[in-house]
Picture 1: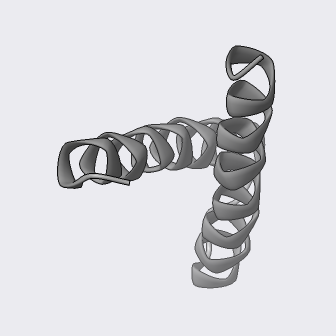
Picture 2: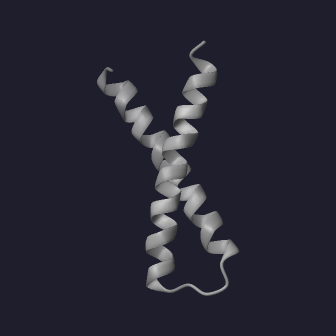
Amino acid sequence: MKAPATLLAVAEVLAWWAALLVLWLMLISTVHMLEWVVGACAAGVGALAARAGRRAVSDR
């Protein structure tokens, strides 16, 4: 991957991560530090899966 492609990939994963973390925090009732950590980890996994899924569909 070239540098611009890598930068775009990182930006995409960060955008997915931020969107999924906000969704997680909106859906829980209490916001404690543990919820932030669990939400951030779950959003990270979801962001990587979303990028992989998008690449699988668009790289045909």
